[in-house]
Image (cartoon, rainbow, N blue to C red):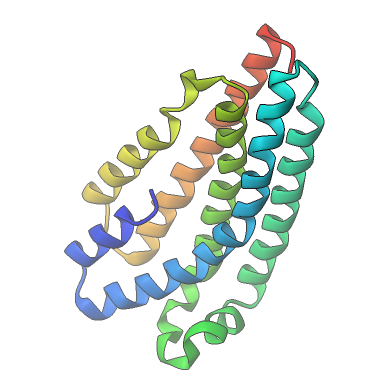
Length: 182
């Protein structure tokens, strides 16, 4: 999920296009790595509260809303000023990646919110759903393998896959809430 797309793009596209894609991917992943500490801080707190049999839904919801809110802001910046964002890291040499930045930012934002859910499931001992990320990584790789007419199509596949993973994570969360107290 983290880099299989870059490997497949390198396989299917000429080196120059693969470089453009790699630049866009790196710019987008800034969102994920900037927000990852929120999930990492949430994890031990939820695990501790679970052991104490105390409610941990507040910490989880704060984490989700914080990551979703910051992701929304980052995605808006990526959509409204993709050239600015790209040039901060790479300068004008990679301007061909500008059309990919906004959608890639959205895709990685969806991944970032999913990551909060996945960490919640693991921290709270609800591990039956832990296969979600590897399963969607396989789906993403298969879709890119068969549909890679353009770099934009590849990023679109990632965005759809990340959106589906977030929806599956949310559905699982609400299903768990119905069965147990959080």
